[in-house]
Length: 377
Ligand code: ATP
Ligand code: MG
Image (cartoon, rainbow, N blue to C red):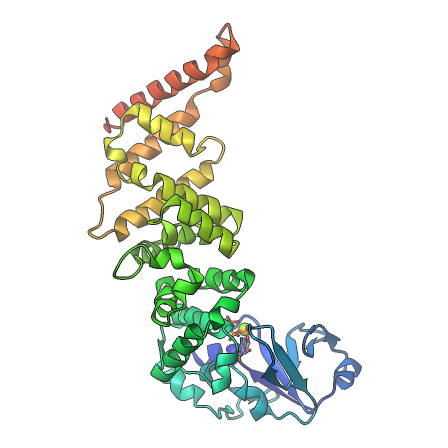
């Protein structure tokens, strides 16, 4: 049996990037041989094993054949006679289809598809026409575009377009889409992921909501700004959705099965974007109401996140919106609102029915006083 380091870890190493988890391919071995050598089988659909000590993944070399539409319709063939070259041929991009002898870090890179040249030229190029058999590869390509800032080879873009046109993308399941999108959102240039999806026609199939917002493509600058400021996943997702109508955000988030934190912040941003952007013109009562409807008291962290997201929206608007004063007023109001001691006010009242009005008045007064003190009235 012969073991090679393959795929993303080798690519990242060649790029001089830190390598988190390495992938290995094993040629000339049977599953039983792996088990006898102490590896633990984990693959459900194809033979993958965990190293007894490092717990890294070791996959038996395999070929695959498409048997049904969608990305699950594959039959895998793995046997000791499958060669390394055959295994590399089924991989998605040339930069992911290189290998190196596991025992010798100085051994030459095995690179039958020109991955090194594409790495140097910063190009994503598909390995073979079999690329078209798995629409997840479009998502992966878009994610790599966001991560590395690489261009897509014209023939690969053309193939992605044909795949989209043939309805391949429609077979993607929500979990897989979210898995790739959420990873792509966290990279330095997440907008590049959506731009590539748009260029190959996949965006309108996966997230039609964001293609319907503007005639010249979806506004991506809020997301770019959110990434530039190192914002969280929920904030980046909210920035992506910030220009949509709340109803569209709802539909989109449900279809993508976005986690609750992402969904809620995005919905809040879509609903309160305008109020926050124009908070420079709100009076104390309106500011207090803004804190109340966004549940700032019970969810202070989310409230601060929201204020930051709208900051990215303001910066990303065309032309940019001056948000400094609005933001300062919102945060002053938020602090004043939180400092009102509801329990103490309630204790001074004769009837519980009086509480809501008294609280509202106390909060408005506190907000007004805070604004005045900060010179923000
Ligand atoms: P990341 O750094 O995000 O993990 P990766 O390229 O290592 O990127 P993995 O999912 O870890 O991605 O996959 C390891 C390798 O397996 C890839 O480099 C590629 O060679 C191959 N691979 C993974 N998914 C696919 C796919 N859908 N189609 C073809 N090859 C794939
Ligand atoms: Mg990997």
